[in-house]
Length: 171
Image 1 (tube, one colour):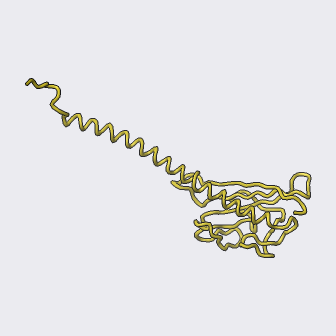
Image 2: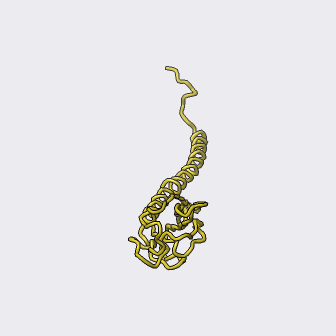
C-alpha cells in the first residue's frame, strides 16, 4: 500500500495561523455586539419607557379641566391645590425644568417627591411639560410632555421622548 506524502496532518504553525485569524474575527464581532447591546438598551428599552411615562403624564394632564390652574400633578393622584394644573407655562427643555412643571421617577417608574426643580436622590426619569395656547386661540391648548433619563446605557446620549396633544374648551 502506498501512502500519500501530503496527507500527514496539520502542522502546529497552520493551527496557530488559523487561530490568530479566528481571534481577530471574533474581536471584530465582539465590538459590533457591544454596539448592538448598547443601542438596543438605549433605543429599545429606555426610549420605550420614556414614551410610556410621557403618556402616563399626558393622561394625568388631560384628565384636568381646561380651566384648572391649581391642581398639583406632581403627585398621583393629583391634589386639588399647590400646582400648576393646566395653567399656561412650563418648558419642554429637560435640562432646564420650570418649577411646578416637572416631576421625577425612580428606575422602576415610581413617582418621587421633589420640591421646585431640585431633583431628588435616586431619580432616573425626568418628566417636564409645557402648556400653551395655540396661536390665535384661547379655546385650544397645546400640551407637550418630554421625558428623559438621567443617563444612557454605555455613556451615550440619554433617550428623550416627546408627546404633544391638543385640549379644547370646555373639556
